[in-house]
Length: 121
Image 1 (cartoon, rainbow, N blue to C red):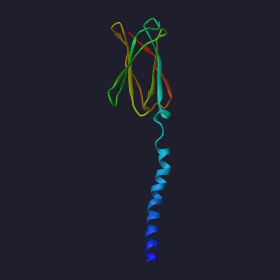
Image 2: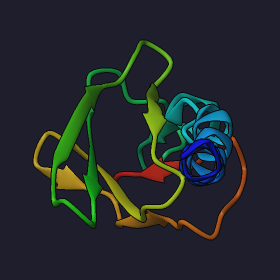
Image 3: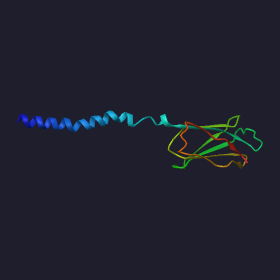
Image 4: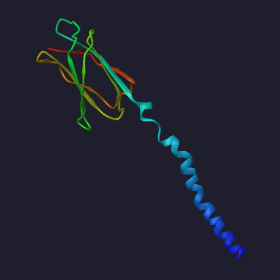
């Protein structure tokens, strides 16, 4: 009887060992996504290379199709923080009915901070 009990206890201990290893490794596998987030910054200019204040910059996530906007600062600057590193984004600007070309921030671009300048035509 004791031998059978010892076998059952040993089997339980051996089956729990892989589980405890998985639990110990779990925090490493689920890092904060912000650790790998990237930032897109840039400026918007007109044809005369003057910075455009209050231009609207559109950022489209090509995976979810969600669009975020930013109204440029006095110096024409814009900023989109906390972007996923595994997604392509399309960005363009509009000002008084005119629009810039659409540019792409690729998932293959591994920079933490990307800088894209937009020119409204």
